[in-house]
Image (cartoon, rainbow, N blue to C red; front, side, top):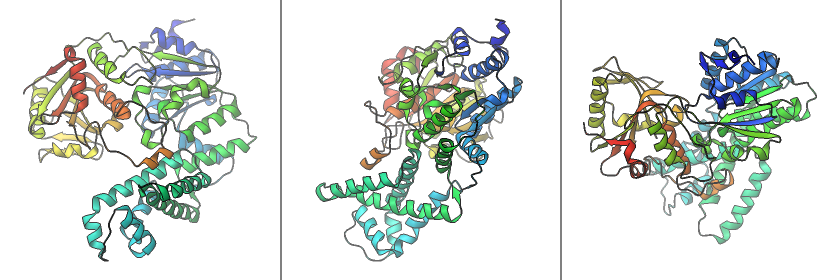
Length: 512
């Protein structure tokens, strides 16, 4: 075979990537380590399918989870001369519905949140039943009808309740559950209500049922569907459709983020089309459990897809050997994940540098001076929480809606801020992780959830802070050179303390 088939974007595919390109298994899972060239492998596979196997462009479907990732892959394919369908699951669902003459409007993405805010901020104060439930939920025994005081003194508790209701409903819908299951939950919790000291679950469930009823009513009145409903309807349409599906090969990127609802859609699509299937992802980077992601679909791939084979891409082209070994030792504490041994030809002394701060803002300014003097101008700042950035910025900084930061002192610096969640899939010359402290809202985030969430969350892993651990791994592996960790001197992050204990030979404490 002509070796040119294995050249993509000017790079030669490595042996593991070549093996994946040549695979003829019906279903394959590609476990792609951070920075290992998964996009290169996907493009290489498509090149092979078209140039060698003779597939047409319209017979290949690519799926990913965000518009940004779809646009990036689409651009990569076009640059290589291929015009392939690259869709989010929602766009695929819309296409299926349109092809089968099912016409729906798409609801506003913020509609559910709007209904929740309207209910808890206004409507509840004119509904005696739900107002009493709210008082019981908040454990308020005496209450004078002063609504302003309730919203004023219990603002944080009510906001937390609103967020939990929103998260619970989104998780419930991401599983594809129907009203029958909700009735089963309610009956069970009602029985527990009579015998168990904690009655909070039933109060919470009453709010969920009320909001879901109002939400469905609003959707019905406008003949609209939300994103989860679109996927559910598209799955039903595929089950009942006799239309021919042209796809012969389906590729899904970021498969570790698949929900049960999305899995059901793709399973039906593969059944109807008899297409071959390649899933690509990394269980070490599964960070969306609270958005409905079910990691066990990834970990148990061969149980969900017959005639399957698992491949690994283990050479990283982004991170140094020293950083990979540090991150690998940290992430492998979770034993349920798929074992892989990452390799790198890049060597770098002390790629992880720790700054202990008493005043984080002052330490951050010193760090920017240090980076500027070292001619390290391209910087990605990441943190666990979106608001963390405002604890270090002042009037010398201007930040736009996309996280790009202009620093008046050093205009040459190219700085961007993102949460770790939003940074996944990206890389930068230098990464700074801020606000690393041992706190409920620190990193790891130690916020607990109501036990009722067990109905809608995927199985919990035994190791403490399992998803937070993967999130920290993502933060560490965004860098192409150095990763600077700004951690509290008084209450340092337990993750920072752990990597210092385990991998001190690759880590440097610096004083600026």
